[in-house]
Length: 290
Image 1 (cartoon, rainbow, N blue to C red):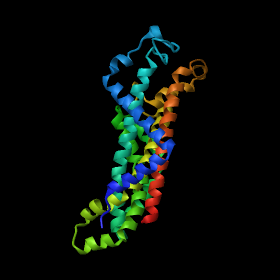
Image 2: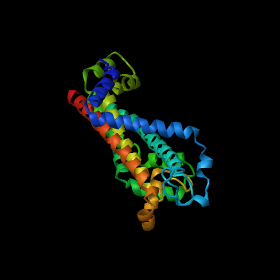
Image 3: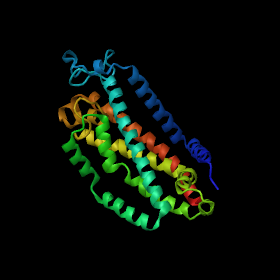
Image 4: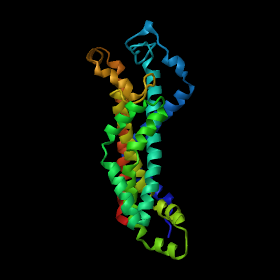
């Protein structure tokens, strides 16, 4: 028997509606995303990134609501570009990493036995490698010149193992249920059973996992960029804007250059966390019913 994935989304939405913090978080997150992407679409990025030494380190004013940075660039426009870049990285790493994790986890959980044992050893070995150290090493050696280059490094090292373990466990449970045995008896191809029958039953768990991974990837990008190991110079990101706080005089005398990006990162992470908790409660209910 195939469970309609629409019912899982209804259950998640019902859980979110019951939680006021989750609703506020979802509205804020969607509002920030719309602002960043719509404003960013119409924003002249070259003009926004152009240095203006006459306006260096200007405090907030009518002309520059959040002031300017040490190169005279408007902080509001910089934050829009930086937030778009950080969100692009976080979404790309989450979606592609989850896709890899889903594929590997389904294969391992569905076939089990020797297939699972061999693949599990490989995944465990990769999971034992210090992810942050590998990202720093590859970032230093390869020096990616684009957002996509940096994203692929994070995906290759860090972006798929968590989802693989999660999907594997749930696929192992689903593989023992009667509807899978019945489909095999009827001669349904394994790939059809995995993606058309097993995968829809994992929607709530998958969505919960992706939400948590998204928050983690956003924090990872912010941290690496703050340390100067993220995007290449000249490509703004929220972590890159925060990095000016490493300068004590800037942190004390020019808070408008680092406090707004810090608040934006905090709000984004908080919104994702509130929504993720609501989705996770829905996923826990689904796990208990499996």
